[in-house]
Length: 433
Image (cartoon, rainbow, N blue to C red; front, side, top):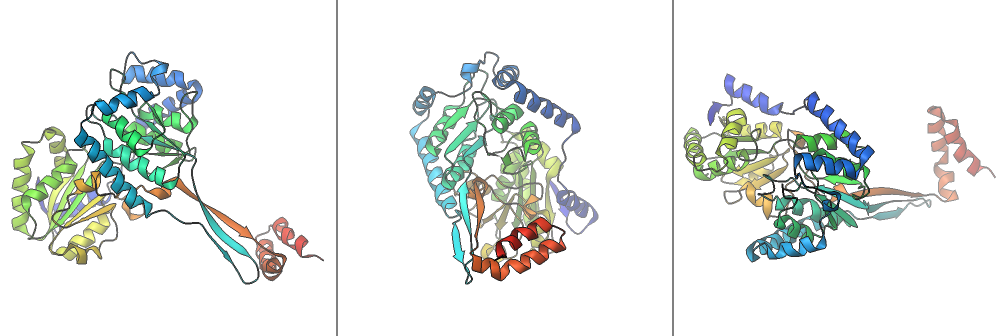
């Protein structure tokens, strides 16, 4: 893992690369995704079956599209009690966290008799995308929980989940149990861009949704980007990221483990540490090398570290906070002596993890905060997936004659200035007696 100085040429160049890491999508992928979307819109279930046969399960048929109740019931017998308890604990914590995000409707009456307000309403139907995870062998249970729970807390009546099947045409039982426990209403065995298109347009089998959430590969991400507007989406997500700010109080072995926890996600993942301590930097570099040898996903992590991994020496922790705000990482760990006082300096991050006993992994699974987070510097203006994604705000306005008499002249003046005489007349005609 590279050891660079943030104030020297090579370190400055690396930081610039991080700050400008937003990635555009190659044109060839976009053409493929547009063709897939076109096919699903035109051919519906038939296209879904064809794509699933070609890419996931050769024997797939139309009757295999939706997961049956019997499959869900059998899934409970296929997982152990400890896993079920972990799923239920995660759901309880995520639900408790997201309940606090719910917005409230409000109405107020002004002195002259005008009534204004806001009604908060959930979308009627939400679609959740859950990646397959190594051909179905590594079920992304946490993604089911992190997308389904805020939707249900928001009050969404129907939550639809899609996930690609394995080569036998099945979904991992842990995914099915998590979906049932989280309150998902129906599950379909489809993946990639064709699953996103099916949710956006609807087919004979798959219901059309109002909002689509959840991470995925480049095809999933592009499909969401292209169809945004046709359907609501949560965000355009890129590769996973972690930025750690550490001082002499930190344990180099723990820091190395946290850096690798993100590097193992993807060859494009970002894993960076900022520290004013050269000793800590060198010890952490050694630990990364040592732990990397034992990592099952060694090759993935190694490639990620080569491209977007580094430990940067900074002048002091103040410089570290400034750089962190410029980088705006998905995950930010504050592994410093007094993280709570340091928190006030942080402006831009998807999620912040404070102290030596708060590895980013607790946020991924059990803490309750959502792990679907803005990447590629989008934390400058974007936020974690939450209840707000599944709710809408409807404005309410009611004027009495007295209120319109008092404020109508201002409406007329503004409308006439904008050249919209019919707007002005809609007020004038009401004020005539």
